[in-house]
Image (cartoon, rainbow, N blue to C red; front, side, top):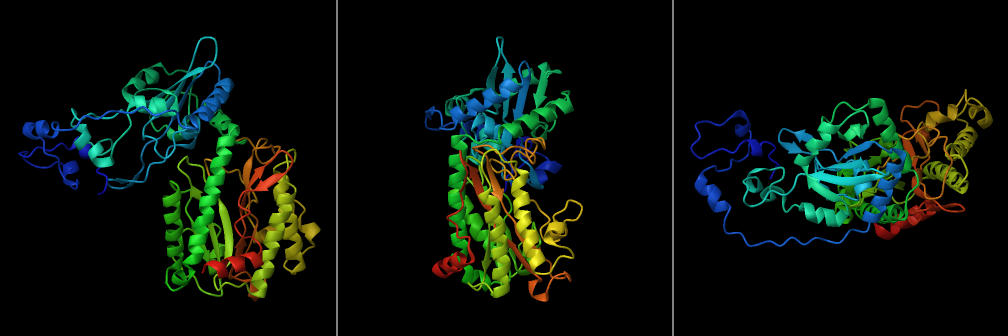
Length: 493
């Protein structure tokens, strides 16, 4: 049943004269007679609320709150979860809390829309955390059956204030009490504006941006709980790739095979996690040359390559981001293999330099040196590889216009509001997690490349954890070499 956005405002009685415009758009109407209300409010078994112990991430979230507290003493910090977003008419997209909210509370896929975390400065330093959300409507209220946003008849059981307080280790209050925070807001109040809507006005936009920046930069280094979640996300994603390969015969037989790829992977994401971490790219044939191909409506034709860029987001909202390029027939052609192995060479070269103390941008530069050399060897460049690598030239980038790495975590492009000197030009540290994802893309109409190259797109993307003395490829168990990919397909399809 589609969610009914207007139900709370359309408590239509049986003997009303005519429906309002809002009521007319509803799929059903709720009886409003006193007799009905008395009847539906009675005859329910007693329900005992069990307050759970704190979930494992609660202590980690508390440490994260302490970290942001130290950066913003004497300021009131407001971090909204955000609200549902409309998809069409009276249906919404599935709710996902803002990443900063989940990171600071530990509330993941089960978080409540409209919730707000407030860190209030206390005398003597530090902050007191309070989580405000719309508490459960009891059976003595008509909201439990008539309000489609919070009513349990519509969306199922919801936690009480006490249950959430125990689960997350955070004091809780009803959302109505947030009015006092709103009224007290002043120049010392910071809010994550991206998730705020019209929740709070009057704060300083520039200082709010600095607050968001700090939250991004604190996520650059992952704690042990986050790293374990990343491992779980990668493992689930690996199972999703296996699922796709097993279904390749059926996928290849369908005129919209890319849609089947998307559906198969999304099933795994929902079974083993919360959802996909981003729209799956199932790009077969020349579609693989379109960097963010998510239309996924083309065929998957034997003889072509398919670039599958996909990641499972687990229930804590941490996501993997992995790409493999697969020969649909199970075997690379000689040209496909040459291009594929050139990309893998670039990825391996970049991975080999990762260790604490290097600059993040060195990873990209290392991969690009291989891309420049290989494209020069193929005769694609009007200059030498060394000349192409000069800042004012960069001809090799025609065939790989994107960057090689981005940080990864609770967002697929994590820490995106960090300053350049902390991100692109930042020093790599133990505990960072990021991608390495070089590629080569030869557009179907690119006259600078041999005809045999045209329409071939290859990307290999892995998720990398920086260790004390080097790096670990979290996705290394997903086959990477051309030989291993062919053996993988032969084994499963």
